[in-house]
Length: 155
Image 1: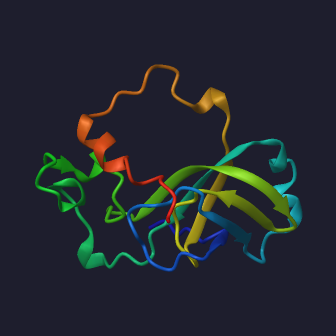
Image 2: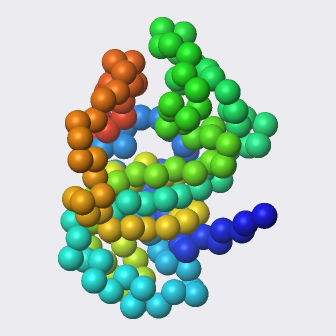
């Protein structure tokens, strides 16, 4: 068994785990009290960070271990849970690259983090070009359709 403790929590106005409209969402991550400000030293030099977090509100009985239609939409083909980015994953881990606005004390201020208020954060990593794909990204058409409303702004 391996235990992971949150390094912090998301602070956001979003309370519900909605699927779309994450564009222009502002939020912050407040580090746990075990970490001092120096844990974030130098991070402000990066434009983006990758946030790894836990979908803690997903009930264990909702976990998908096989295939399903993404978002349960029968217009999209069956796809295994590891061919999706759904929150109902076996270990309930999410990951998103977001823009870092600023660092103040033990808080990171972010744009477009798709995690709700109170979400436990497992890790924060600076985004470096050298860790991004070095070859063209390929993905199926249904995934483009699924993601079309994801990053739009709420109106």
